Length: 475
Image 1 (cartoon, rainbow, N blue to C red):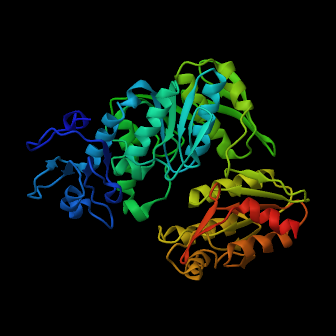
Image 2: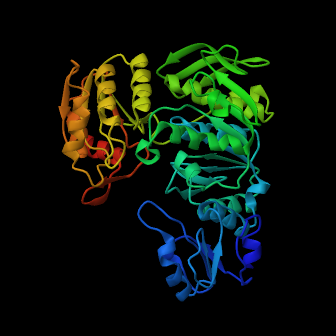
Image 3: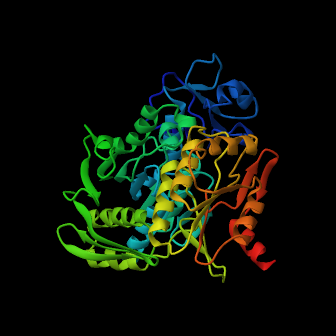
């Protein structure tokens, strides 16, 4: 493809030779003869430092955001934004042929995107999905490396969806992806806001930056659907040109409201009130399931689907791997795996389990290394205050000493009276929790969710909590 086509809709600041490029990349390790290389400055590596080397390897040109004084450079304002547009042009702008639904927020994105996909498919539509657990083109599953992929992978997925005759794509849009321009130039039919609580401050540094990144989604959508029970629900769309639809449980003036909520161990039931009233039965227990299913219903109803079809589809939902996932054990206690890895996420899942528990709620959890350290004592306090017993262990310690992470967690638990046990090795912690479980206990394994690996200082190992539970019980 000619460079001029790849650079369409991008302001270029210098003259360049309109050569043919066979592929585009921002990864210097992938560059081969005929590639267009986009120089992006990251946290630890700046692609501009190898621009000349990439030309020597055979790149037809390098896209830069400052004058490097070399032949073959194409100068733009932002190489991150340019890379997103270049990738879209390379794959034929497939997003233009899809109705895009983008969800952002701290919690609830994964479950809600799956619910939306299931609703639309029950209404006869073919749907693609981009998210944390996996990417999907209809029923075809593709591995997910990030919540929101890099522009090349994302546009490649969009291309597959269009070629497979998908009409809709529902996707999680992370704050990092928005800040890094991974969705620059992409327009969404619907932008959806779930909630905003502390997370990812290791990357964004300030709350203002975190909020500002989330807000970027709603600068590029036709209609926003937002949770007005969250204190940032209206602030996130304040002053923007998009239409706004609201949903909530506490705010009875929302466009979509859940009333007369009933919780049980088998799920939640409530009346969905909009221009009509219907009874929603969601087979996923927990208070957050009300918000997730109400959000998904609000999206489908805004798209024009019938209320009866929407609530019928929610009733058939089979949940999401790693989200309040019940592990088969054939015991007199229950084991649940959940991805909760933020203070708010941990509070939500434990509170929801307390509402349905007939015995103890035992929470096994840790905190990730090389991430926001201020979360650790907060999560320790939340787990201790809400649980009947805690098992403190490792999550993904990464390069940090796991015992030092645990010390940070225990700092938040020192003024509480809840008993706890520290077992640094997560596999042994699970073993201890199961061997000491009592009748009717709910054993919550929090933090790993869908992940099938653990990142240790020594490297990444295979670690699937379902397999660990089965192995412990088998022995």
